[in-house]
Every structure is written in C-alpha cells, then in structure tokens.
Length: 217
Ligand SMILES: NC(=O)c1ccc[n+]([C@@H]2O[C@H](COP(=O)([O-])OP(=O)(O)OC[C@H]3O[C@@H](n4cnc5c(N)ncnc54)[C@H](OP(=O)(O)O)[C@@H]3O)[C@@H](O)[C@H]2O)c1
Image 1: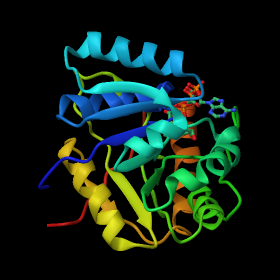
Image 2: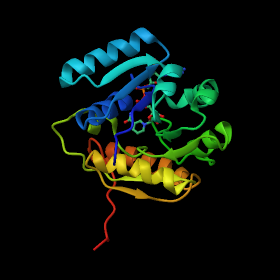
Image 3: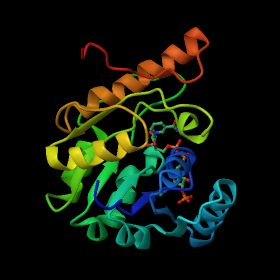
C-alpha cells in the first residue's frame, strides 16, 4: 500500500467501531471516529488516544467524518442502518463504504431475510458509492483486546472487486486473512453465519467463535 488511507468510522463510538479504531491506529492509520454527537466523538477519540499513546484518532460528527475520510466503515447499530445511510448519502458519493452490519435478532438469531444489509446500502446509495461488506463475523471484543492475536478470517463481498481488493489490503495489514467471497448478495449468507456463530457461543460455552478458511495448500 503506497499511502495509508484516512479511515472514518460511522458509529465509531460503539463496540465494533472503537475496536476497529484501535487496531487501525496501532498500525499507523489516521482514524476519524464519527458520531451523532460531536462531544461524544471527541471524548471517545481522546480516550483511545490516551489508552494507545498515539495521536492518530480524531472525533467528529458523522457527516464531517465521512467528508474527511478516504474510506468509510459503517458500524452503527443495525436498527439505524437505513436512517444513517439516508442522512449521509450525499457525503458518501465517490467513496468506498465498508458495511459491517449483521442483522441479528437476540436471543434466538436466525439467518436474516435477503437482500443483505450491504445490498440494501448499495441500492439506497446508488452507483456513486462502492459498497463493500466485511467484518460481520468478527466479534468486537476480538478487536478491542490488543494483547490477543486476531484469529478470525474476514469474508469480503462487493460488486466491485477492485474496491474489495483495497479493503482486503487493509484487513491484511491488520494481521488477518481476508477472502473475496462474492458480490453483495453473497453477504446475506455472511450475515447468516454470524447468527450461527452466536448460537455456537451460546450452546458451547465459547466466547467469540469465528471462522477460518482452510484448504489453500
Ligand atoms: N458488536 C459486535 O461484536 C459486532 C460484530 C460484527 C458486526 N457488528 C455490526 O456492527 C454494527 C455495530 O455494532 P455494535 O455492537 O458496535 O453497536 P453499538 O456499540 O451498540 O452501537 C454503535 C453505534 O451506533 C450509533 N447509533 C446508535 N443509535 C443510532 C441511531 N439511531 N442513528 C445513528 N447511529 C446510532 C452510536 O453512536 P453515536 O451515539 O455516537 O452516534 C453507537 O456508538 C451492527 O450493525 C452489528 O451488526 C457488530
């Protein structure tokens, strides 16, 4: 990678957003945490900077965060998916949007109905935004604990394979294996896998079940 992109995380004050921000910042990425509240964004950024001892994280309202980022990751609560995308549609034009949404209903998760969250995002945002689905199978806690090695592989889905390649390069830079797994319709299966992983945790006394792809060599 020639120059590391600035990465903005929408809903970046949450569990997955702060975990991803930590992993990105310790690898030298500039990260912008987006929030509905400027104060909350700045507070989260200050906490992470203090904890990590790096000066690479800033906090901003979501629209400014989108405008300031080269690549955007969406980690808002699943119930806010559509509303967040609608409110940021204009600012997102021309960008790559990585959608981490896994539509899981607790306590008994089932595979969600198609279309996938990322297909819904692509339809809503139009062709001016390149949507990539990733991270739906990785527990936020796995990112948050920097002492722990990242064991999970990441399945990456997109209609635009070049955009997927850029996201895969970043994921591999974080120390994970990433695999292109098909277009945005395939991402519905990836969301369903998250439901299975939640069940595996629940019925087998496992903390953060994840997936690994084998069979390469
Ligand atoms: N947690 C995991 O282990 C995990 C793993 C894989 C994928 N995911 C996916 O990642 C996404 C985030 O999960 P999470 O557990 O990180 O969520 P979370 O911590 O509960 O919330 C994330 C952020 O969503 C924002 N938010 C809440 N209500 C909102 C609204 N009405 N409009 C706009 N933003 C709103 C909040 O940010 P502000 O209040 O600062 O605006 C909050 O910090 C979900 O789609 C989930 O399926 C989660």
